[in-house]
Image 1 (tube, one colour):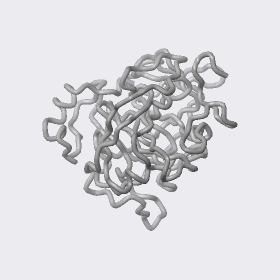
Image 2 (cartoon, one colour):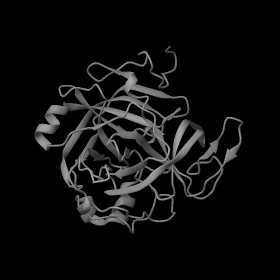
Image 3 (cartoon, rainbow, N blue to C red):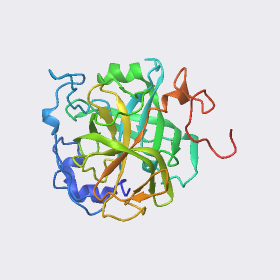
Length: 306
């Protein structure tokens, strides 16, 4: 899970042109964990506009609505009941938080932030800069997610950039469904399927519940953390990319292991994982307001709250 990348690594691997916003791929870039380079299964120039559906009913990959952070990937997201006048939200991993990894059991809410994000269009070009006003929610307990509130509404963003948010699905991911892991940091799309689910996914001090396991085609690397995992049939976000077992280690940093209901540990070297997001919408009420006490909300709560 050594996914947040240093600016020096970016400069060395991508060069000045990439830092300036080129849409070229990064197939030769060095992964943060020192493992194999990413395999580009789609390039920016090959993506049709958002919402394009092939004759088979599978939505083609698009970068529209994804965002690049300084060290990770993310996406401009809406809940199923979000409205155009609501202040917009950006989603990335908990371990992509600018202040560092939340510790096991830690939940952060309502923290001021001025973080900036580069919003991408369908072909991975820049559609403008978004700015946060608050860390609405961040944790690495049970899941691995950070949600930022922005300074602009969805309507304002769409008016200035032409980009609409991606919708968080409110239903559980489906085994066997094809997915695209869309990394705005690398401007790459990784395509594979949901191979199954890990009852518990343990990495170092952190444990995540009911994690999505990819089929081997999604060889995600450092910098892809926080990428939306999009169900190609619905076009909705079904999970958030967060880690890979890089070298076959057992439950250690950068080497998550699966633990089943009986406590049996399974290590799958080279396999990537994502955290489900279907439970997040239940925790947001009218106006995109976080309410951890809402009916059906199962996100971990800060210590001392019920």
